[in-house]
Length: 183
Image 1 (cartoon, rainbow, N blue to C red):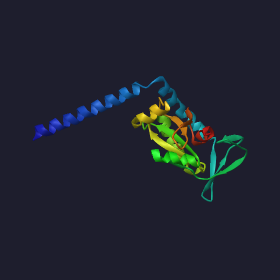
Image 2 (image 1 turned 180 degrees about the vertical axis):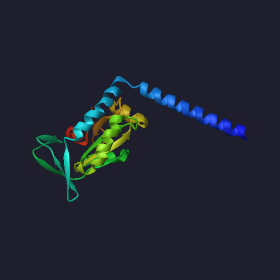
Image 3 (image 1 turned 45 degrees about the vertical axis):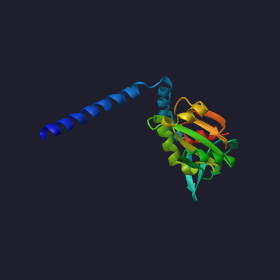
Image 4 (image 1 turned 120 degrees about the horizontal axis):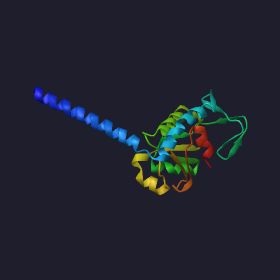
């Protein structure tokens, strides 16, 4: 009985060490692009402070000084209604018939993706009406990555209702920066 417990304990320790070593190798195998994206996390924190919001009857007043939201120049305060941030499903591309749809290729292990995901979730009511941001699992979406030529996480693809590419970009550090990119 004791030998069985010892064998199980040794097995657990070996598995734990193997997992630890594999996780370390994954970090060491980051590409140059991944390292650049990782360094952007600090910049995101600073950019988050540039957008101030206050709740007004369930809506959010976003203060943008001389910025651009979508294709409209905004001076002073702009009232925006809630859009959405949802998990990707091919059927949701049809939402582009009445608004804008952006695919956010996000990896759970990507620090800049995590920061933007948290920023979007904490500012959901700041997503403009008609804008749908679809969260695409970077690690499990090979066909979509191939279709849109996505080679690294933290990439955005704006699509029409048929799923045709309108625009592709990467590195929007905040929801406000993402909104500015939408055509």
